Image 1 (cartoon, rainbow, N blue to C red):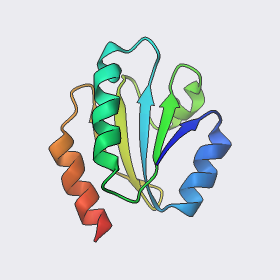
Image 2: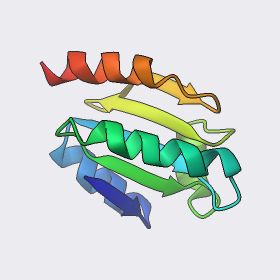
Image 3: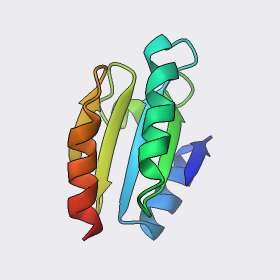
Image 4: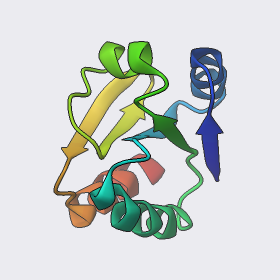
Length: 104
């Protein structure tokens, strides 16, 4: 399920309920993001983990906390720790392998 994040509290709340979650940092002006997000959303339908879509231009503090310098950036989080980071050129096979491990 995709959640459009509007404030940092939403991330904290969703993360506390879902130890494994995916942070997807984007901006409205990112052309690469336009093709990456539908692929990521399609991949996520096979997993019970929430996908948190974050506009890095609106939530700059949150992007800074996660050291996001470029978009798109995808972070796979497990119990508050980053277990995978993919930026700009996304390797969906790598994301799928990690999600399969976390889903067992």
